[in-house]
Length: 148
Image (cartoon, rainbow, N blue to C red; front, side, top):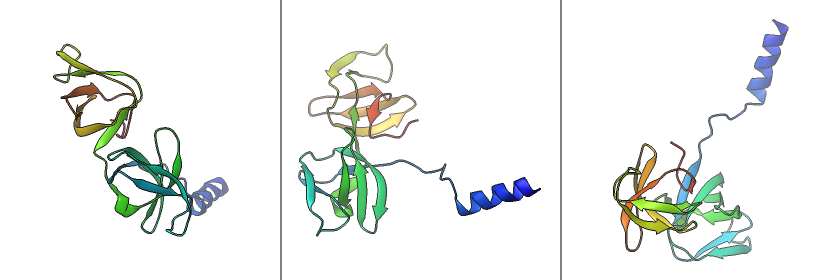
């Protein structure tokens, strides 16, 4: 009984957040400042120059979000510069298919690191669009979407 009580006390005072969800967001503008801390007075660490770039939120403080990108760069961005995720980045070269099947007609080769606009995901496939093409890629090894 003592062990059970001890385990309860530890779990109550030191909860382990096993249900934390990953939150992906996208950059709303072409130029977004990333800061060292969560305030406008904090110095600029670096600047993103790519609209729709997907990033992952790892912390938040008021209207600021601490983020990390697919290259493990991190910093703080004001919430006004972010939007709900609508993009992803393949972490390896992909084949863009006309339909969500390996047996479908291949449309294009998508290079790793390219920002793709996300339309929807079903099963193990995501429908995306680029400047010139629209089609389906497999959803493994991509950055910007929760694992199915």
